[in-house]
Image (cartoon, rainbow over all chains, first blue to last red; front, side, top):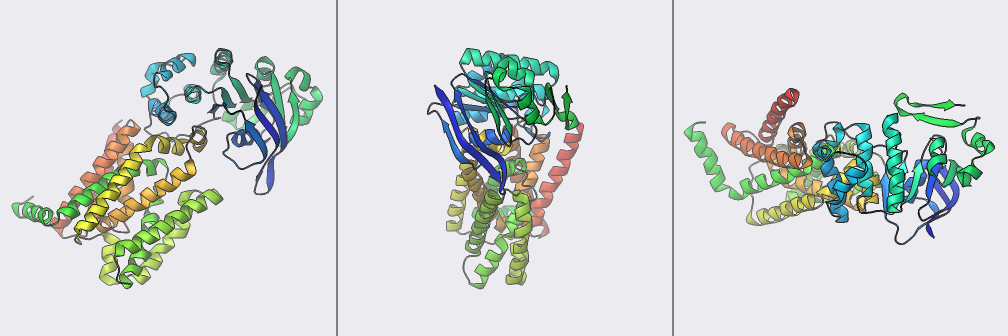
Length: 239
Length: 267
């Protein structure tokens, strides 16, 4: 049963296409990976799905879709005295969700309750990413959108975060849409893949869809892995 | 402080209870509002916003109507312009306000004359009528109620508009209401602090709170307390030294800010 249908989706900024003619479906409990080089329109696609940018075409969510969103990063001024608890309270309050939910969510992402009293701006990037996952899970969503969930965390946290996400999908019967640069993740966790490069280059089961030819077309050079190193501000290609 | 000074201050409070109560209530609203304005990085924008009131004040004086009505009209138009520009162009509020509305100060100075201009710019002791007092208090209550009831939505929208939207917050509407609360607070404070310095009563207490607070709740509480203390001590100082009220209030706030820097450095 479909939870999302996208038809001929295009997004334009100042008459320049950020995304053109994208069409795909997502079934319930699918794990869809969205891949593509920088500037391919992956985050723009998410923002269109979330309804935060104007778009052309059709985006149809199922009536019972409850969406949780984990952004790539959150830019927080270091001096901002907002605690993790206060950050989570915003969504608990808005959705009138049960505050006791937070305790079990912290356990799922392996965060200690003591972190709730710390300022959001002063926790590590790995802890922040987990706090964002807790935030996304408040209100018991059945769809999760992750924009490069491990882009700003160290490699040891990265593996744990993916394990957590995978367990969540199983335990909570979630549908997940994940933007990623990591092709090994796509093969391990996703049952569908969408390749973007301003327009749609592929959509389907990863093992069948991701041919060498498609990947060359997508990234413009022969490759196996495409890693994104934010701290250096550039990308590395490993053949 | 000498007995004479104490008497002068007590006499002022006894003779002008509406003025003092409205000034203190406005300070509470300004302190709470400031916490969100500082988070929203509107520190530099708040001054020009208060300047928008000046042409309205000047025109109202020319037309011999209540100056606050003129100020309210231009502030409202200004807020709607800022909101619609921001929504359409995506340019930061600060830039828009800085570019477009500093002009208001120039126009206002041309249409407002002599002593009235000084009063409008720096605040004064003019009498508050019972009607003005009750309307003012009602507006203060509305501003505080809005800020406290919507503090979760405001905090989230400031932190990440995307997260706010996906959590069900209508950020466009919330931004408009926040700007309206901002201009209403500025309007309330014009009499006491003046067009030039009202922005400072919003921002300085919140800047102190940011230095001292360890939570958002703390920031709101400290912001309101510092604003009230600044107005109270500033009014007393102004009466004692025969100064315009605005500069006295803002000087007290700035002194508290400097003290808060010392505490921040120690942390």
